[in-house]
Length: 351
Ligand code: NAD
Ligand code: UFG
Image (tube, rainbow, N blue to C red; front, side, top):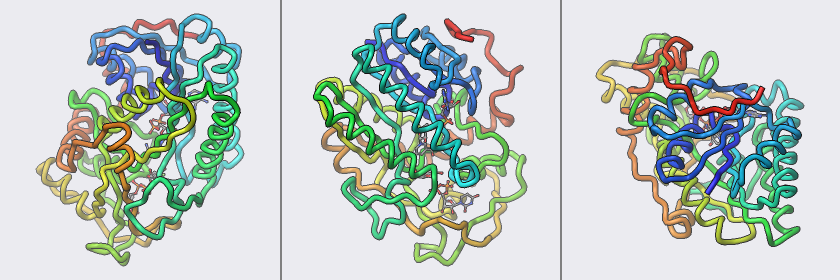
């Protein structure tokens, strides 16, 4: 079975490619590398020892996308591609609305033209806005607080309208909580551009000596130690969730929405302490002001995914920190050109 992975060179996409290849799927990746490196795909090939096809292409390139669908007998699409930085989306709302919405519309139109109607879509816990209570179930009230989040909300709505228009469509919307960690090999992981916005890459870069100390945004929340609590999920568990969602969507029509998290919350200070334990070094931090827009607590009710997808996150905080550290310490500068493996991807590269 052939699966098109949009954004497959990115953090979550590259880990999902590994799981798909190891499960015997044929994989076709489309990515414009705007927030990633082709080296992640070289590493996917090296880890799996399997071939797959990569097109360096923007999803907005309708003609190029049609060529991909005409060349490969695609059975389903996992759609990761998009812009994802909350702060940047406030600065560049048009870019976020244009890229995230238009690319998804073009993708769905081309899928329809080539009679492909099975889609797994990356959404986010950000669609719960400012939740009153955790754990958060899928039927909790929705509402985003920034343009990035609103693109996810709008796309969820668009996909529901699409599925309502024809029974051919089978769509799985996955709301991720906070993905962290990396593949066990230490060869692929999260590789943010510039100074990281998110906690785990920031902690890792402090640990490796690239940044001086972690700024802990707020210590006066109503939580176990006053710092923000989140549901961190290992990226490999998340990737495996996509395989379960794919299996499910192949056999049914309509839209299903699932939270992918662990159901457990950890505070910022607990994450720093966990990282210190596995890295065997201290992580300097200072308490800073609250970050505007942050909420105190956010963790998932995962019962629906557990029951309907037969999926449960298995990796705990220790393993998440260990794997993040292995990736960061063996690749202190991320995917450097000269650190690439010699093996090239079996690429039908598209320019
Ligand atoms: P990422 O930036 O690492 O991966 C996204 C990939 O899409 C990148 O490789 C980028 O080059 C590519 N891309 C972007 N725009 C494109 C376009 N127009 N055409 C072709 N390729 C394009 O991000 P990620 O962390 O792997 O996230 C994947 C998806 O999951 C995104 O949709 C994101 O919004 C969503 N998500 C991520 C998180 C998180 O914390 N990482 C949380 C919730 C949801
Ligand atoms: N934090 C710090 N210092 C930092 C970075 C973060 O103290 O340098 C704190 C935050 O205040 C928060 C926690 O660490 O309490 C986690 O923050 P992240 O930025 O790592 O993650 P968020 O929960 O804020 O948001 C992330 C993504 C969103 C996504 C959301 C849910 O950035 O896009 O997870 O999936 F919507």
